[in-house]
Length: 268
Picture 1 (tube, rainbow, N blue to C red):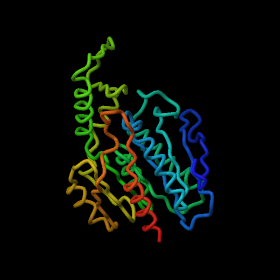
Picture 2: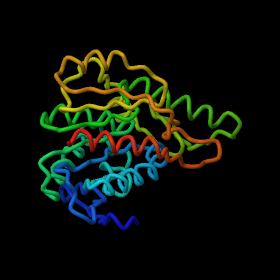
Picture 3: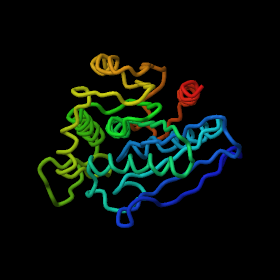
């Protein structure tokens, strides 16, 4: 652990739907009146991105920001089973995390930072909250159908030269990707995501970071008229949520430091 931070694991939320979180507290009183809530990906992308997001929390603490990382219901170390997950539940979990971050830190301002599906959930929560200072969308999932098709293609490619697993069951619209099962109910939820169709003001300051090569001109066109200060960045960095050939976990140091710099700049 970095000497500039203290990390406390804890559970929060409803007693029957407890969420696991890690609170990163700076070891010194920071000059910022803002806490950062990190909205993580799910499934295999959660595994691939875990180390990078942990390092990001440390860098934010070094800059003086308190940080909350958390697992959605049915994911990671939170209560519930993976098949119980839903977009509505995870959106509620995100807003609960924002509330807990405000209570725990006393910070009047919140920055949401979401990666992949975490970016989509951050957008939904921010639009509902309506009072966030800033939001960072890192390779956000904007269209659920394309996201599911990407999962299918990745799994198909991974099994191309391997023996296909036989689980003894088959369900329509069920997806298995890198050991994670996406049940029909969650797939239906994901198919309904189309955040480019009805973008609303998310926060005073919005940063969209794209490393996946997809140009989101439609998102840009819809965010610009919302009176938010919107910035798009296309850093030279790999998509850390994709599986690597050797199974390694990528930590793009320059990109992480760029995120810390942008968040710091919006608070001054």
